[in-house]
Length: 77
Image 1 (spheres, helix red, strand yellow):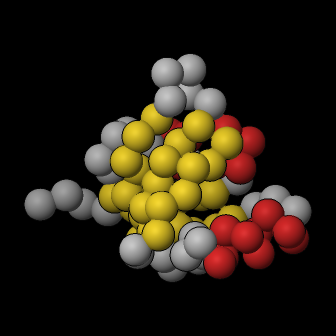
Image 2: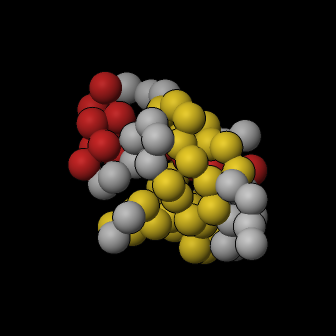
C-alpha cells in the first residue's frame, strides 16, 4: 500500500521510500522515512496531491512522490 491508497484520516507507518536520492533526502527532512508515523490529512480533488502529517511537520506530496512512499496501515481505536 502507498500513500495514494490511503483514505483521509488514516494512520500508517512508513515501510519504504522509493525515488531519486534528492527526493528521499527531502522527505527525510520533512519526517517521512522508514518507521515514521503518517496521517493523511487531505487529498486534492483529482487525487494529484496528498497532504500528510509526519510528527509536527506537514507535507504536500505530488502523486508521483506519494506513489513511492510505501506504508502499513495502523489499527484505529
